[in-house]
Length: 155
Image 1: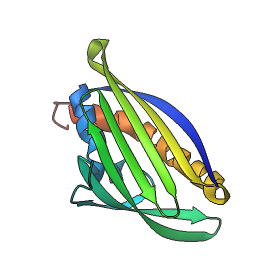
Image 2: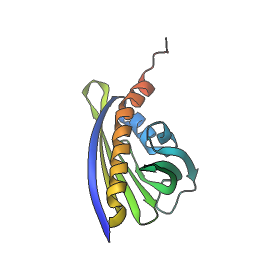
Image 3: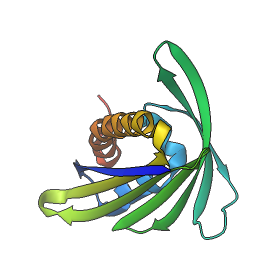
């Protein structure tokens, strides 16, 4: 039996939607933002995917630390929308639907909806880990995009 739930967050950054889409659709760049990722490898795109990756995360369960590997596919890449789906054994899926919208004063609004589905015995742990990791990513995302859009040289 599977369980499923969704959480969402919004980030604003001083950049263009295209700059935000470039960062968010290239999962090799997620290691700097996602606190669990330790390695990302691009692989040949799977059927229906624009880009595919194999990702290693480092997780903790109480005093135990372990690595896990999963596959992620970028299904839609646009300047206004990105959809990725990550799959891990056993029957765990994380769907990320990101919408990008230009706002006044050179800001971009990034609305992210994450849906996690997992076997019921694993669901609470997996959902808690996913939510914590993605909310940490959200706190880093605005600063990373602001830096990438800042044309001034470091002092």
